[in-house]
Length: 148
Image (cartoon, rainbow, N blue to C red):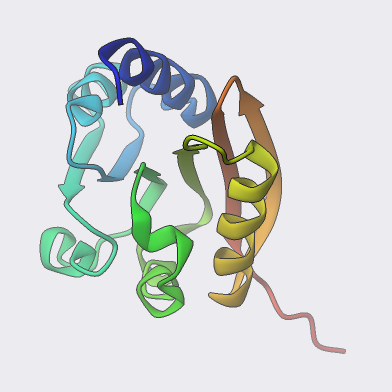
């Protein structure tokens, strides 16, 4: 990933995440984007960073978050169990955002379908899919079962 591509990815993340001051965020991210998000949520918000969905519990002490985001995390292409384990960490009205980039020879439709399928299999409801250039952002919420 080029430096320019990374900067565009962080800008896209900030746009879709809409993390306002006071927001609690779990960042599944190994890059510098979490520091930029922390600036946006300010001193009354909080940002916890986990290197992977699989290890999120270790870094959060089972707290609830208004937003969880994953930026360029391969687990969201294949690891349904790790993604499903995030559900208890998301506040009832929270948002899970998976931001990824289409690679060479890959289109954004394929990326969004792959990520959406894993999220749905993990029990999340897909709320929206946004694209900007080669970037895709999939917004998911905790799936609800209606009885009655």
